[in-house]
Length: 365
Ligand SMILES: Nc1ncnc2c1ncn2[C@@H]1O[C@H](COP(=O)(O)OP(=O)(O)O)[C@@H](O)[C@H]1O
Ligand SMILES: [Mg+2]
Image 1: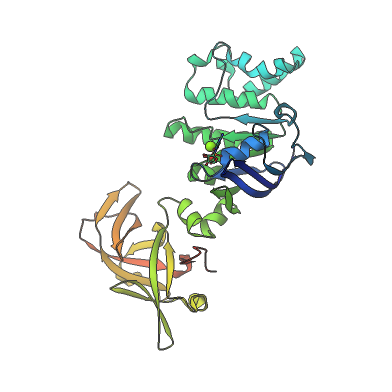
Image 2 (image 1 turned 120 degrees about the horizontal axis):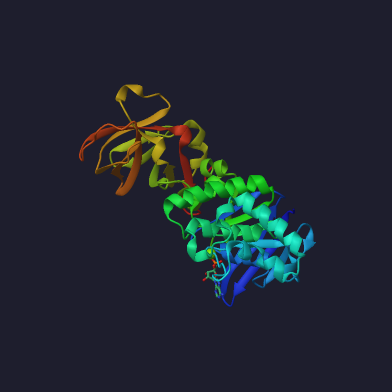
């Protein structure tokens, strides 16, 4: 059981910088998720921790021990991959015990640990089967079992659910979360799927181009994204981002959303807009509510627009329309039938909006 610390960790492949100056402290028992688009350096980070990839510079500590020079097998971490890499000619229990056998662990001890993993993962019925006789989800469970028997200080998961269909992915996600509660150990989990990241993580790291963009709890990164990238990466559908003009006249500040819509700048934002003529405005689809006119509060923004498209999803209908040439999505809960061309009233709670600097794309607080 251990904490994992990365200090100024960098990995270059020739000219390509895969991971840049990463500093990170992962406390014991944390479920940490690295998320970001393909190629942002997630797998490289994980592989460096596992010792499968040489590091260019920096330090890696596992349980306060510097492991830079240690072989993968001496780091006491277990990695679970997307392709399960089970041995096809071995049964489930042979697959589970194999790494211990190689490590010359005592036979009784192997039996005990395999039995324990089988119990934890509910593989009792499948022990004598070969991988070809298992479903995708069952194979993934065996792959996790192989990691468990080693009783590692930390588990490293690299997109373990990517090969599964959507329904199974959701099921396995729940299983992995329960597994963490049972094992009480450090997990570093890599995914490109922000929903997976949100549902599993104690803390999320959002990466881009080898850098950490933001670290925080799922709620923090959702509610307080530090820049446009995080704001649009976390949450589905992605946050609506609009380019707006700031218009100051007669002591008043207005925000021009499009040619027809000028909204009063909320008091608490006025100071942020000093010397700015343009900003990005971010509004999540669920904060852009279709309403009846008479429910409007004074602090809310309100406007009407004709919609281009309505997509009924059952519990909600997603409404699409344009503002300033940009497609915008609104989520209508408790939906009623809407037709293309209908004029809909929209209300925005101004405590839920985000502003970003037009040049740096950083959040204006
Ligand atoms: N063996 C390698 N040789 C050269 N470049 C690599 C190698 N592995 C990864 N890269 C590059 O490093 C960057 C990060 O890759 P990776 O860590 O696999 O990203 P992710 O897992 O987030 O998709 C990418 O630009 C990728 O092309
Ligand atoms: Mg990867």
